[in-house]
Image 1 (cartoon, one colour):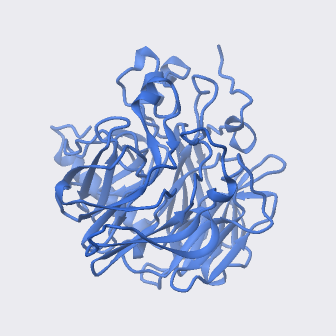
Image 2: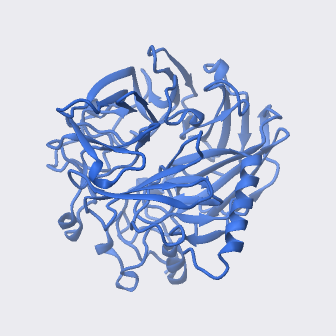
Length: 500
């Protein structure tokens, strides 16, 4: 039977799979792209190649589509290619879905039991000579940073012993080291957490194993100069639920929130877990150390913010409690009671925060976040629709909004520095928009952070519609070229060994 996507929300309208692979040279531009921008915006998101095995699924369970926008001399070129995971190769051979529901291996076709079922659809990172497409239920998938051809899953020369790897690694801008975790590191719904430090040339130089207080999502973490901190909130998993074909994650309002703090190069038995009230928080865009205190900044809700991860008791989705406000969690290593102290930094409500990554793990001032603003539509099922981005000063709460017209929706932005050595948050936000009318074509908008509320300085137009993506990164051309050299040097040194 030929492929036909069902008339479900995740396969319809602006969510309809694009499945476009190809190059578009010289995109149309309305306005002016700054001529000094010389680099590439890498982006990844779920774009199902086949309908779900059951006909229904959540939007996050799609095959990873990696896209790039390459800037040079005021011009922009585009490339799009699937992350060719083991899952996608097997399903292409069968011309149908073989893998079942989101993160449930018990729902897979018997022919693919035991295969890596990751989709490489959540995060993208260029580090140590590898372009990594990542989803946190599997090892990272390496792709060529220029052609986007898939190399294959990497285990960092055999040193990655965890079954899973974060979709949100953190890179220290001073040392060039990359920090990573894997939760459910010994298999789905386990409490095991693996922690890694990876050198600038792509070698794992430190590993630690520890156990979380309960089995749940640790989607992101933060780094400081001496410590790392792992936040655990009540989006829980349970192996018995999976065996019953229930959803993987459910929000449990009875669970406390936790932050585990570990020295940067610490052993697993050195972790200290700090507790706080039941909260929802997943995207920790930044954190930093202040003496013996660690600060973690994220949009935080007093209830479940993701309706596709339902309440464990079947309670209805509470829209008021789902609203996330930019909040700082502070843990003090001299606090014998090990409690989380919570401070709201802005009344703006939203999700998907970013910062200037040159200040990653250091005291900073500016936080960008996609928000719902007064007068905008908000309803269950449309929770992830945004038309506004906030620029928030975390030192005083001052907030400036950039708002688009009602007929477009925004995707998560990235920050591009005006110059590599320039001040914090001085540069541009780049983000995709989708027109909700007509052919629903996509555009890439550039907003100058120095005049944040003003209209975009450039609108880069695509002749296609891109399905909403997840996360992305900006890299200067000189850095990309350096990473290509590192990757080629390692490939030459490892001709007689396997890294996969």
